[in-house]
Image (cartoon, rainbow, N blue to C red; front, side, top):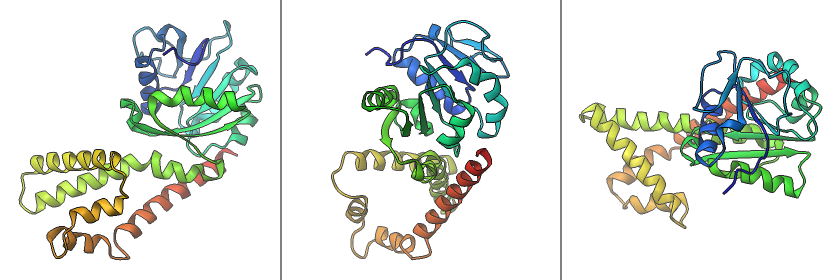
Amino acid sequence: MPFPIKGPIWFMGCGNMGGAMLSCWLEAGLDPARVTVIRKSGEAVAMGVTVLTAPPPDGPVPSLVVLAVKPQMLDLVAPALAPMLDPTTLLVSILAGVETEALRRRFPAPRAVLRAMPNTPIAIGRGVVALHGDGLDHAGREHAEALMAPLGTVEWVDESLFDVVTALAGSGPAFLFRFVDALAAAGADAGLDAAQAARLALATVTGAGLLAEGSTESLAALANRVASKGGSTRAGLDILDEPSALKALIRDTIDAAILRNREMAAAAR
């Protein structure tokens, strides 16, 4: 399937998330000769991809620009980048907490601005990408979905909820990794070899996730299927289900991430 964007593609920054997006798109058929990565280090990213330390002063206008720098760097890169764009450029931002209005103020030329919040499993095409578009008609939204489809599950979200999605799906892998690590540590504390406990915990979470993905039952129902009345699983669930236990901990975790996203949004306004 041909890559849905024609013309030059620029990445402003190419760290972990931007690099994962680019890698996935290259695997999906994007010609690396069409890609220019602009990064301060000038470090190479992939064979055939041009890397520059500043936007090229001449040449064709980019059809797609992906803003993939740290949010705090936005005002450092915008003055040099903004004059290079025109109304045909699709501006895609993966900057956490930076709202469309803030992007429009710094990049007035593009007709279409797309906020995207991917998470790290996009590196294997199994990520989540939340989208909010401004200046996109129906065809433009379909185009955006096709652009993001190789990365994983695509969901459109109202911008007022973007901070919530960022905390849930964007930060979620880190929270899950912490949980798996804690599961393994508990097994090790109970006597298992630490490396074996880590293998078992990871395999358990991986298998359970695949089982849940293929099931029509709710997660609560799946948990209850494992837990026999009066059994060991039920004894463990009774601890997790205490009002001040898992749900309260996760709620506080998500709330903390949402608050930080809102602080970054305020700083970028």
